[in-house]
Every structure is written in C-alpha cells, then in structure tokens.
Image 1: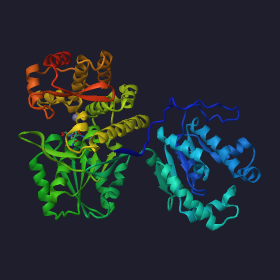
Image 2: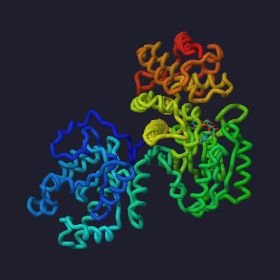
Image 3: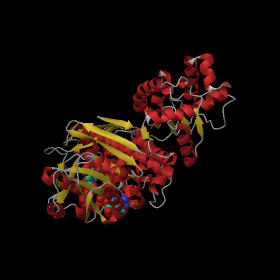
Image 4: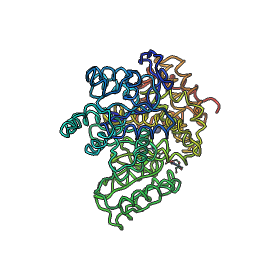
Length: 572
Ligand SMILES: NC(=O)c1ccc[n+]([C@@H]2O[C@H](COP(=O)([O-])OP(=O)(O)OC[C@H]3O[C@@H](n4cnc5c(N)ncnc54)[C@H](O)[C@@H]3O)[C@@H](O)[C@H]2O)c1
Ligand SMILES: [Zn+2]
C-alpha cells in the first residue's frame, strides 16, 4: 500500500472544478481556474499573515488574508460581524469566500484560525489537497500565539481573553490542522524570514510513504535540499556513519558530510570507483575491511550517495555488514531517484552477470535531493526518462501527459540551468514514478506477480544491453523494448496501432531510442529464453491491454514475436 502523506502536484485546472462566478467587487488578483499556490492555517497569532506575506514577497505571488477579504466584501469588521450576525453566519460567509478563493486565486492564501473547523470549509480544503494543493500549518507555541493574538485586535473569539478558552480551542484545532496540512512548520524560535524559508522548502518537498508486507515503512522525500533531513532519518543511535559515494558527486557528498558532522556524527568518507566499476565484490570487500578497522557496530549506519550503481553497492554493504545496519539512500541520478532507490534491491555484479548477487534490503529512508541534479549530464538524465515513461504506460497516464507537455524541455535538460518551473515538473515526475514503483513492490517484495509489470519493455531491453556489451544505457534499451512490447500487444490483438505510434512519438520526442538493429532475431530469442521471466521453454512478456493496464503474455506464437522484432529493428 502506498499513500501520499503529502501530495504536491503542479497547480492545474481540473475538469471537476466548477466555474466560479465573478463578482464585480473581486480584486484583480483573482483568476478563474487558478488555485492557491499555498494556503496557511493555524491559530490566531501564529504568524500566518506575517509569514504568508513574506512567502508571497519571496515567490512573487499575491497575498490574501481571508479575514481582510471578508471585511472588504461585507464592509464590516470581523468583530462587528460576530457581534451583529453571530458566529454561525460569520462561518457561512467565511466558507463562501474561502471556497471561491480556492477555485480562483493563484497566490498565497491565509485563512482565519477557526475556518478549518467548519465541515464544509474543511472538506473544501481536503479537496484542494487532493488536487495537489499545499496547506501549511504554522504551529506556534500556544502561549506565545495567545500573547501575540491579544495584541492583534479583531479576534472576536478571544474577546473574553480567557486562557482556558484559548487552550481548549488549541486542543480542538491542533489535531484538525495537523490532519489536513501537507506541511507543518513549527515557528518557535524562528524569525518570520526563517519560518518563510522553512515553508518554501516544505512547499517544494514531496513525500511518498512506502509500506507493505515485509517492508519496514519508509519515506522517499523529494525536493530541493532534502539532504538536510539526513540526521533526522539516521536518528540518534548511530555514532559513526560511512558516507559511500563516487567522485562524480563530490560536491553533493561534501555537503552531506558537513551536515552529518554538524549533527555530531563521526563520518568515514568512502569514495568508490564510478558506475558499474564500483559494483564489485572487491569494492565491497574494501569497505567491509574499513568498517572493521574503524569499529563499525550494528548500531552505526551507512549512507549511499550517487547514481544507482553506487547506491546498489552501498545498500549491499549495509545489508551484509553484521547482517544489516541502518542505511539511508541518497540517489543523485534521475534513474536512481525513480527506480534504483526504491524497491529494496541491492547488489553487485559478478563474472556470471549483472546483479546476480545481492539482497533485498529496506532503507531507513530515501532522500532524493533535486539539487543533486545540478551536475547530472544530459544523456544520463534523458535515459532516466525511459523508466519514467514506463511507469506512465503501466500505471499512471498523467505521467505521459506531463512528459508530452514538457518533452522538448526535458530532452534539452541542462543541469547548469534548470528553471524553477521545470524543476517542479521533474519533481512531480519523480514523485509519480516512485509512487508507481512503490505500488508494484509493496505487495510483494520478492520477484513475482505485480512486481513483474515493472519489467514492461525489459525483456528485449536486457537482450539489447547484452548484445551491445552494456554500451547502451539501460533507459535507452528499455525505450526500444517498450516499442517492441507495444507492437507485440498490437499484433496479438490487445491494443490498436495508434497506441504503438504514441509510444514511438512520445519516446523519440524525449530523446529516447525507438529502434535497434544490433543483432539478429535468433540471438535475441536465445537471450530472451534466459530472461528471469521466461519459464522453461515458454517466453513470457509484459504487454498492454491499454494505458495503465499491463498483462502477462505467456507463450506467444513465435511468429508474432518475430514480427514485433522486425518492426523495431529498423535502421538507427
Ligand atoms: N536496485 C534496483 O532496484 C535498481 C533498479 C534500477 C537500476 N539499478 C542499478 O542502477 C544502476 C544504474 O543507475 P544509474 O543510471 O544512476 O547509473 P550510475 O550509477 O552508473 O550513474 C550514471 C553516471 O552518472 C553519474 N552521476 C550520477 N549522478 C550524478 C550527478 N548528480 N552528477 C554528476 N554525475 C552523476 C555517475 O557517476 C555515473 O557516471 C545500474 O547498476 C543498475 O543495475 C538498480
Ligand atoms: Zn529498468
């Protein structure tokens, strides 16, 4: 089971949203179809207005405080409305204003403290989050907030200023705020500027919570600077941390090391050879030796920081040292973020082949820091899009929409210049792809059933990689493999040719390969028979019935397979 503890999707108009009637009195900031970039909730005096305006200024969005908006529309102060019309009527007016703004105002919205307690408003907020909205709960120290709120005027519920009344309000509201918020920021000891920074980091952060039978639940955190969560994920127990990385990501491992040292850990910095060269028993052995020499015990920890090869090796060392020590995975390539870091597989290569020796091992957490992408070469980024597209085809069509809408910018990814809106797109793609992977691996950690659907496109891809002596990047081979699987789905009568064409056009627009002519059908079939999915003499493929609906195809007519192969083995 996978659930989004916090879902942050790009703001997009949805068909479900009803059009909002405009009134002449609305300020110019309102735009039909827009949704707030962020909504603030919290007790009066928590700093919603101060911190909200700070965030608005920093991000360039407009700011509306619903109390101000109500006063403007009603030509009365909130206190007057309470006194003259009563609280229920105030809540009704407030509900109307909030619902309208949730459907029309694309900026920073600060809500009155009591508003989430109204069932209709609460439901509107839950719907807003469901559609990808961000709600920040500013959790202030209740005493401090009380003192501040007394200076603010216009707080009708506190007119009598009874401390007990305040505390009981806090106790009623705090659990409700916490439940509907997607980000909670504790304001104690923070200046408004610091709190605003924490809010902005939280706004950009997405978390996929991975749970399932046989899996210790863990979070995949995606966002800028999420590496700062390292101490929190490691916890207090470990004293020593082995930071395993490649020299290609030195800049990022330096940052991680500083964070760890500042948090009081003793850090062993371990640089391993790059890419597949690092995934060997010799490298693992060298690290085991170091851990032994430096007295690593079961209560110490390992952090793997790098591409999938590095995190596979680091995870393997963590799984085997003293039969398993705490491990935190910090992927730095797109592929490692969306694929290698989730799913619990760790391993090394041997003379017998790639990934044949390894272990299933669950990390304590995954920190996919988008800042790491600032050094990732274009071809490695683009290759990662292959697995992203695969997740779209097998489970989440929205991924395909996002890829299609941003294809050119993704294909031209330049790590030295990634605009904020493109980073938001990439972040959403990572979140969605990790969610798809987590869904398929959570029900069965070991290789069977649902998990096999993740191999869409992989049967031919593995053969291509072998025949190309692993000079082809995996994602490129998977792209060709998906076109092949789509052709096979069509030839066997499951999908129409338009979906096959869509595979070709989408993948090639992303800069991925859609054909291959580096080997014969006989060579490919021989390798396919050795594929993990083949059973006895029967070939087994994952094909599509439609987008989002993969099925198994067992023992297809070899002529159909040959025909599908012919259609992808054009000239390059
Ligand atoms: N465990 C799993 O479930 C799983 C799933 C998929 C793939 N994998 C494994 O992952 C590996 C492939 O992952 P990969 O594509 O990340 O390969 P990789 O680790 O070889 O990284 C590719 C290249 O990019 C470099 N790189 C990575 N991040 C960088 C960054 N931020 N800046 C600059 N350079 C960077 C690496 O140093 C390397 O040279 C394979 O070994 C594969 O077997 C494992
Ligand atoms: Zn793959």
